[in-house]
Amino acid sequence: MVAAAHPLAVEAGYEVLKRGGSALDAAIAVQMALGLAEPQASGIGGGAFLLYWDEKAKVLRSYDGRESAPAAARADRFLKPDGKPMATREAIPGGRSVGTPGVLRALELAHRKHGRLAWAELFEPAIAAAEAGFTVSERLHGWLERMEDLRDDPAARALYYDADGKPKAAGSVVANPEYAATLRVLAKQGADGFYRGPIAAAIVRAVRSQATAGDLSEDDLAAYQAFERQPVCGPYRRVRVCSMGPPSSGGVAVLQILGLLERTGFAEAPPQSELALHLFAEARRLAFADRAKYLGDPDFVPVPVQKLLAKAYLDRRAALIGERAMPVAPAGDAEAPGTSHISIVDAQGNALSMTTTIEAPFGSRIMVRGFMLNNELTDFDFVPGSANEVGPRKRPRSSMAPTIVFDADGAVRVVIGSAGGPYIIGDVAKALVGMLDWKLDVQAAIELPNFGGRGEAVEIEAGEAYERLAAPQRARGHEVRPREFPSGLHGVERVEGGWRGGADPRRDGVARGD
Figure 1 (cartoon, helix red, strand yellow):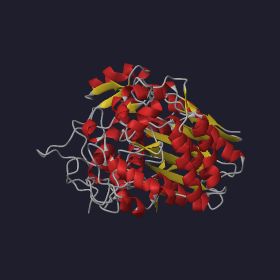
Figure 2: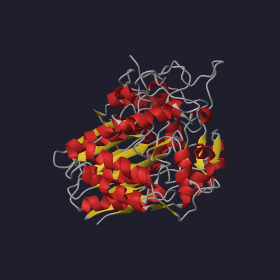
Figure 3: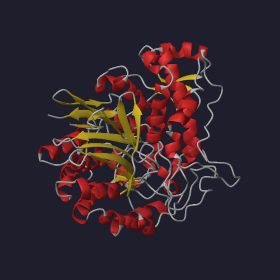
């Protein structure tokens, strides 16, 4: 079973599974195809976190392919001359926001341990599609229309826009021969073909030649390493939930939300009721307060993961949740938003949950050799002094939360994750409570209206059923804001006799399996 954000990518991964490939092999094929057909969301110019369950060894591993800052980066990177932080929209376009991409090194590292098919074979579907062309979706057309500054990049303009500057129409076919040529190099040379040599030099030239030039160097690319990290796991009801640890904050925050819900009567609240929404919102606010204070790159700052997830700590935090909204959700004392998600299970029961990103739609708006470069450095805090301040070779805090849930017997029950920037945390937690508490299937849980937020306000998906709960939430003291919630949840769940997949209708994704 493969669930991902574009049919072309799902088909590529499914065919790899049919040829006997592992879930990891399929993920490589899916990622290369997403970089072609969903260029606004992910690609080889970005980064990823992935969890991999080895069914035979009964071991869960996690891999960190998060982008890193250049060696020349300093804490004041996103401050204006008057010392005030830039607006995010100012900081994103151009070379200043580009971090060293990490997804290829992470996939290469994981493939050495979990791959069954040859590395080069996994690039064939995307190469063929890049040469033949892919069909522009309504969603991609809409993003091309909205991102007006993408037209400023000559390569992107030539590929995605007509001569008069209008985006290619939905339904039109776009070939990307430069991307095919890049993938051929990577298929032959491995990830080294990206991090050293002509492609690396082209990336550096593009970053340094922008009006807002960056300081990425060929040494930064050559020095980049992906890491195997320790997954974070915690109990919820009768299951065990595992996700990605720092430098992602997503796993810790999801586990905190679930741990707080377990302690506040959420199970007794009627499903999808205003009480359930209130409890979820308060748990989310407390988790985000801790996220802001404690979470960063563990290679640069101490991150108290075990204390943040400790039973006694969550007991104390849960006691703050009452009938009315907290005036301010405080951080506890634990010391002494262009992304895509892939969920895959192979015939042997190996499972992969991978969230992959270039950060904003079309990343930094810089195209090199057929792919977009990330703007991941804008995930750092712009004002120096926090655990997540900019630093040389440091990895910015992320919200990505690729997740695998195990039942009481240790078998994989759910594989899930989402796109959505800081909203990922709430979207994943929503889908989990939908399945684990409200007994919905994976597709129905994904389709639930999104709710949560990234700050103090409760944000509700506009135009959906939960808007009727806005007035009761305001009566409890919440600030409520309807908004668009373009999540990208993709999941697989175990059912009797096999697996069932779910894909977010808010994107172009599908699920396919036997």
